[in-house]
Image 1: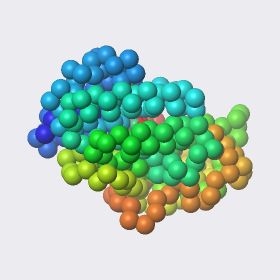
Image 2: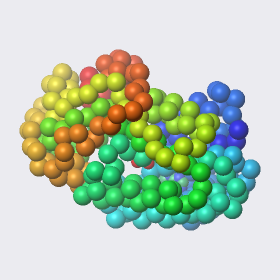
Image 3: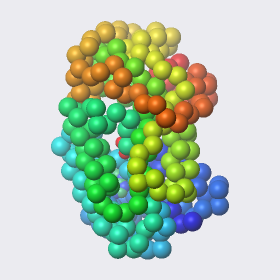
Image 4: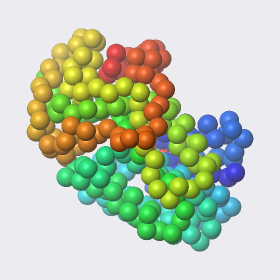
Length: 258
Ligand SMILES: NC(=O)c1ccc[n+]([C@@H]2O[C@H](COP(=O)([O-])OP(=O)(O)OC[C@H]3O[C@@H](n4cnc5c(N)ncnc54)[C@H](OP(=O)(O)O)[C@@H]3O)[C@@H](O)[C@H]2O)c1
């Protein structure tokens, strides 16, 4: 199977390309770094010619709401039009668990717009909604930091390893289009504020976590405590946070979760 991975040089994309290659598929990493730009359209036709499946794990260079909306709308429209022209049989996109519950945040509205374009496109598709990557917990902490204070809502979070996200995306890519959505999540559920408080404490980070039900989470203030966790029927990944921390420790000096 020939699979074009849009965003194939990114965190998830590079892992998807590697996994598909290991399973005997021809996986092509497509991104500006490899000469394929879904915003300008450069290199897109050459990349998609002969593709069976397109996996979109790209991300907006800016997570700011308006910029992200512009990115996901333009990129997805260009991509789906090219896929229709080349008869691509399956479009797989990576989205976020709870996207439809987080619409007060601009980035999540952008992901929702991406999902809507896919559903309406006529191209057979599967949307994989994943929870927050363990690799992203540090960025969540930094985004909530002001001076020595980290303000976080006491919402549930069920994070997962990027490796497990890539596994789920790769498996979906070589499967039959669902024309629907599948959720994947980590094996354990935490309270976001408590998880970060413990992690910072363990590694001697001087920042203090303040539990604040109105703290903005990437533009979303006040969310339901279950907004970030999946519903029934989600596929649960294997890698536990502590295993990931142990494996990541030699590579990263201070991962959140340690
Ligand atoms: N962070 C989380 O916890 C989380 C949870 C669930 C879902 N997601 C979703 O996961 C997806 C992938 O995230 P990630 O962290 O793997 O992203 P990432 O590491 O930031 O990689 C982004 C990729 O997008 C590519 N890209 C940027 N502009 C492009 C363009 N104009 N045309 C084609 N490709 C372009 C980049 O290419 P270059 O390297 O060439 O710039 C790069 O390969 C995102 O859509 C995000 O919404 C994230």
